[in-house]
Amino acid sequence: MFSHVIFDLDGTLLNTIDDLSAAANWVCRRHGWPVHTVEEYKEFVGNGIPKLVERFVPADWQTPERVRQVFAEFTSYYDEHKEDHSAPYPGIPALLDQLKEAGTVLAVLSNKAHPLAGPMVENWFPGVFSFVQGALDGVPTKPDPTLLYRLMEKIGASRENTLFVGDSNVDIQTARSGGLASCGVLWGFRSRAELEREGAGSLVETTEELKEVILGHEP
Image: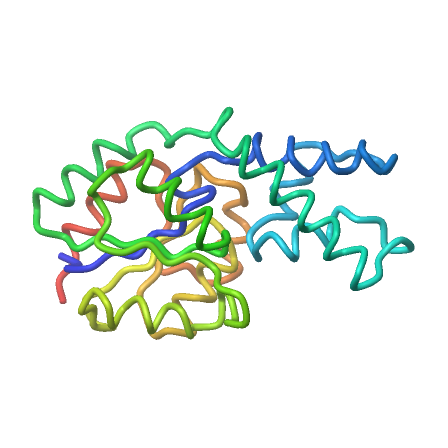
């Protein structure tokens, strides 16, 4: 079995796309810009909120100062509404309980800002994760391994016995940059084709399949 598992948050543990989309479109409407569909936002997310903002702000309007302003608008609105519609994917709470019972050390590494990620995880999964690491100002986000290594040190994880679980190319790249095994989940925001292209170590359609990948691993 894998003794340690590091999960992505959005699109892996929690289905947050409706709240992210609603916050972004609120900003767009406020400025008179075109809004986008939920399916479009599934492609916009994954690299953190600053990059999400860059993707929905019209290119001919962007300046560093304006993007910072929109980032502040989005963050303020999203912080107030981030759990209006978000919820764990079916089977996730039970899976986490089973992994904890088996002695697996669980953690979260997200490109969501750290002040947002921690409270969301604790709200939905109180006491489950040994550590939650969100994005920090001035520190590279996934797929850069800087925060991954910091997290692994905090939870006592080794490369050989740690699995990284996520739903996007960013997550598979993160695992590869950190020298970890990877597993792509197919219930999230991105497609099977994307995860296969990126070289995911395994792909799962259900939480039961993910449990088998984690607990059936031979170090």
